Length: 573
Image 1: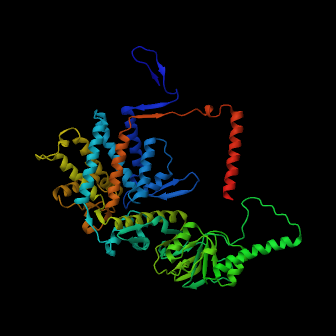
Image 2: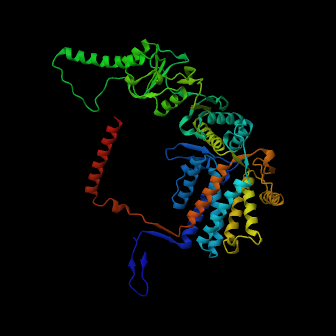
């Protein structure tokens, strides 16, 4: 980059290889990138959504219509494109649904700003209008465009979950999926002193087993591990078992690294073996004293310990994951103990009704079933292959998050593009209002980008109509007329299967207000963020500068790599 003003000498400020986009050029570049990302997944919205097949870097296949799953696998170079992908991930983590809608809406909001930037309107004016529109949208949704729901009414809750699953691969098995999702969330929900905690990620686990059909999927109100008992004589079915959970190994203590022992005589070696056996016997006696039926440990169990436990009629599982142990603890009421000497009667879990080892396919699974008050659960998924199972898991993840959102904030908005159309009409009416008490805000040029948000919101019903092959202009005009004629009726939307205009009150498609609120907030805030960028500097160092003094540099790099490798190996041990 050269700089020189007033006839003075030109001075080089940035490196010669640096690329720089400034002002309008940078803004147009960001808008184009956002529109391209939005167009990529536009066909993935609604019940008639198409699937995308994406090859990941490892050569695996991702087959899905979930916006976040698709964009996660796509390699994007443009920085604005990366921001768009990030908002899809945020939406997925925050509310679990609406990952496709948020990208489409953000892309359209930026596309609407293009004409104003070309006409010379300053980006700050557009941003001010967008912020005002966001505040109004949130207020309208809370007061006018939503209804309360009774979370204890199972029929209503199932209807909400069904509207989420209706756009997914699982829609054919929606009744089964809705029942499983609702039961899973209700199982892991804890309500203490009016504070609700629903931790799906930690306490509702998916166990994917290829084979069988999707109808064989079920909810286990307990925990299931891909483990078998350690000895053939150990019991494989125990009713009302007493369960002990350990976070220590039932083995003799080993040295951290190499350990050298010197024996002066033959009896010393025999004595050492006896001491090892005695230490294991002592640990096993601590366990046997409490008369448990099942023990689960996160560490190893030696052959000597297995012998003592089998002789005492105790079934044992070893090397369970920390997360699995936490779930068993929550489901059975057992406490995880770090030392066998610390075991007490209150640490024993008695909340499990049945412990059983079952064989599914070629694998053995340990079931902790029929728990009295389980606050953890396992969802067993069956399907044709891994790709189908992965897609089903993503669908269940969305459905369970929708259920959680309704439980935490029990208000619903109509689906099928109805709430977007209602917001569009409300914003349009507010910007055109001629009353004396009208806000000064609408007297200036901010009025036009404010109306642009109203137009951008129509992208959701328009895309739904497009994806089911109906006449876009005709149906969108009819829908717009319906909302303008009946101001109180905010529930007119699109039937995503046929493209017809339907009343969502009768059609029964409702979505949690948390999902819609997050979609609109994230989309508008991302559009504002990208509009604020007026300079993109991309400077890359040349490869030659990285490998200067290659003889010396290569030797140093190899040495560093060897040291890192040695450190990694010691960490593994």
